[in-house]
Length: 90
Ligand SMILES: [Zn+2]
Image 1 (tube, rainbow, N blue to C red):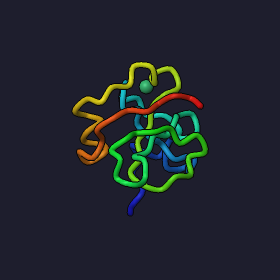
Image 2: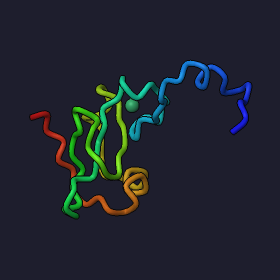
Image 3: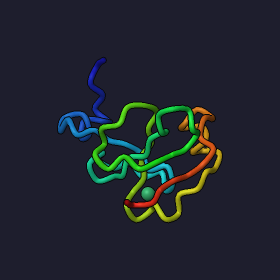
């Protein structure tokens, strides 16, 4: 893939950038909280504190997580498979 000048700031640093599903701001992945569709076809979105779970994932800012809702944007990010939020920090 050719380097694009417009994106050089992101590309040069090799920091993975992800978009918050609540505010849509782009931020470095390590500043965001990863959410993942729980394995086992439960339809639950759960926290992935270690950012290590496999499966369909999404991201949100720490300050946005309390505003996280199962809206259309989130449904789309999880390919329509999300039916429930389980976001307790336990
Ligand atoms: Zn956010």
